[in-house]
Each structure stands twice: as structure tokens, then as C-alpha cells.
Length: 404
Image (cartoon, rainbow, N blue to C red; front, side, top):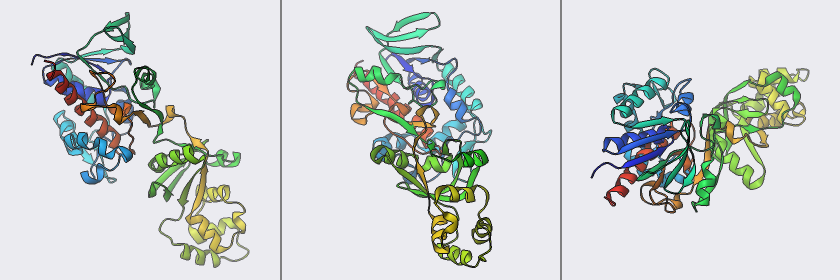
């Protein structure tokens, strides 16, 4: 089959992976990227160490996508975390497994990988056009805003890989939702994922402890009991431990208007031991001394107890121990989607046919965060973007073959 002209809208991981696969098969691929450079969100994610995937057994890895587990399974099986590491190695980026099981490039940044990747794409004939923004559908093709004005470009097939709506300043602004919905594509509203939450902190807590890290704790929600750490912000809480619970907390707020993150401030000490240690404190000891000597708590952890538990200094040793082991942080709302690491919602899986093609728009395919799935941080997001990009490329190739 002779190569066909394929447009890929979006120069992030999903779109570039599809471009690599399709150009290697002889197709003429044009990547249209709205930003001045490709991979801007990818680069920012790798600024302090690119967490490209995770090393846990694949059977566990494939369960990290919630309600979308079964929908994503085939794409992930076709491009596993091991495959992703081998692909990066082929571009001269060796990876290593960190103590948490997360996988990083040895150089701990994304830019060398992206440079090598772009060079490979250009060798394969991929035409990358930056500052080319898709602005909707037109008769005969896609309406594209370019530095030289608006134009319409026709393709034999199109892949949309525009991301969700997090970090809009890097290009993923969710503007595509309206255009696809008008064409009858089923879409779940975009929502923040891997995000922080607002809490009604007192001014005193904000003044003294905004920016403080709460370390060596576990937190419980409908997502389970998870160890880690988080940070107090001026508006609430954020950080890796909060992100691990974010989907469950966000869903609770949407369905019941209330959500509580329950934090164990003394992970490793039983309630019985804490009760005994608090009981041994003299009646004249200050509350700060009781916390420090009885539970090893001071600073931000002691401040959180005072903030979240009414009359905590008057509690009995048993009740105080219970509060330390299950501190309720009541949340008000998620932070705005523009601040989130990623987004949930997007194109419904039942709006997709074979190979990630839109059933309402034959010849239009989608990949990455545009689709209704989410995952925690830890390399899962990137891996699924790469994997769905490859799966969509396969879908495009099959679709074009049937029309040869």
C-alpha cells in the first residue's frame, strides 16, 4: 500500500509516538502543534526528573487505571513499561529504577530524549509544524490557524492527541471538547486529577505553616490506606500522598459534597501504645510537651492536631491517641483543573470503535488524555499516553488499508 497523508494534531507523547509508528510504515505524517515547540508538557514534567514509567509487575501496573483498566489493557500489553524502557534506550536514554519503583532517565531530565526523538522523526520524514493551532472542522478538512493566517488542510486520516485540560499554558486547554461534542462524540466533562484540595485553614496555620511538609504519615480514603507525605499550602493540601487519593476525594465531593482525608500522624505506633505514653505524662505538662514526649509530634503535625480537632488539648489519653491515629482533614473542593497534574474525563470509550477511531467521525482517531481515563502519578500517565498513541497508529493503519 502506498503511503497516505496523515495529520496528527498535538505534539505530545501520544501524538509523537503515533507519528513515529506511521512514518516508519511509509505514510506521510504531518504533526500540527499549537505551541512554539513540541513536547512542552513533557519537558516540564521532566524538569526535576522525568518519571517515565514504573517497574512494578505488569499484572499490578495494568490495574492502576481504575474504571478504564480493561479498556486500556490491550494497548498496554502491546507497549509495556519494559517496551517503553527499551524504546528510550534505543534513543540513547538509559533508565534506572528508583527506590520507589519509579523509572527515570539516568540524566534525570526529558530534553535529551525529546531531542533524539525529534531527530528520529525528522529522519523518517515527519513534517513538524509548530504554531499551527487546530480551531475546528471545515468543509474538506481541519481549520488550522498558522503564523501566515487561517487555512484548511485535508488528510486521509487524522489523529487528535490534544491532551486534557491541565496546564493549559502548555497547550492542553480542552478547547476540543465543544468541537467534538457538536459532532455527536460522547464526552464526560473534564475534571482535575492528581490535584490538590482546598481546606478552610485558619489564618494562624497559614501564616506559620504554609509550605511545610507533613512526612512519615499514612492517609486513608476510599482509595485505601497509603503511606507518604504531603504539603500544607495556603489554600489546603497538595503533594504525592494527596494525589494518590485525589480521584476518590474528588468523586466523594461530587457525589456527597463532603470528603475527608484521614491521616495517621504516628505511623508505626499503635493507638494502645500512644494511649499509655500520653497517660504517663504529668498533669502539669503542657500540651506541646505531651505531644512531643508521648507521640514524637511537634511543629506542623502538632499544629494540624490543633487545627482539625476541637478542644484537642482537653482530650483523654485514649481520645488523643485516636485523634493522632485518625486525624480528619475536611476538604472543601479540588483545586482548579488548570493547576492539576492531569485531568479525568474526556471522550467516552463507547464513542470509540476499532483502534481508537471515533464512530461519529470516520477517519478521526484519538489518543492520550483526551480519552476518559486517569491514573496516579508514578509513570502510569506517560506510559498510557505512549501506549494509546501506538494503538491509535495501528488503528489508523488498519483503517487506511481497508480503503486502499
